[in-house]
Amino acid sequence: MSWLKKSIAVLILAMLLLCLLPGQAAAERLSIKVPKANIRSGPGTKYEIIWQVGKYYPVQIVKKSGHWYQFSDYEGDAGWIIDKLLTKTPTVITIKDKCNVRAGPSTSQPVVFICDKGVAFKVLKRKGKWIKVEHPDGDRGWIYRSLVW
Image (cartoon, rainbow, N blue to C red; front, side, top):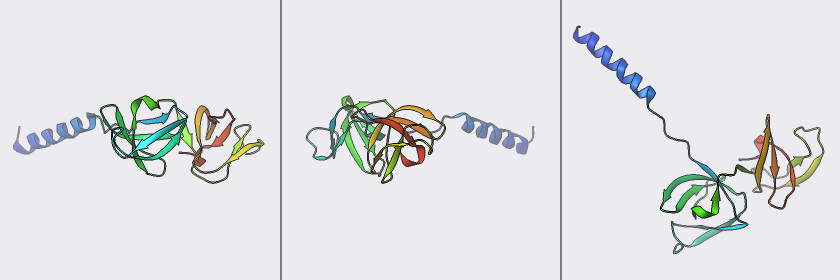
């Protein structure tokens, strides 16, 4: 085999191997499982509490240090939280003001309640572009996908 053919064969093989390698794993999305959780500036209780969040607040995990997770939220804010306060329960949070939560998955359904930006919900079901949600106080309804993160 000529030098050119060998080079092309090696190049093709290398490209095939690159295609088979797994890509970077998507960041894990978790949520708060307790009524109130402290968000800290670093991985430990000695770090300052920078804010607090409530039940069902969703977070995107960035990295782990021991039992602590660094995360970012729907606004891009970052903090640290201990693993025992997190769950894999699917949740969403409203990203717009005055979001209609409806009785069913359609704009023709009556509005059950209206919520502002930053309200977290547990996901119960999905139907097309609609999500059936439950607020920590027990209120339920359907919200359009583009209104949440």
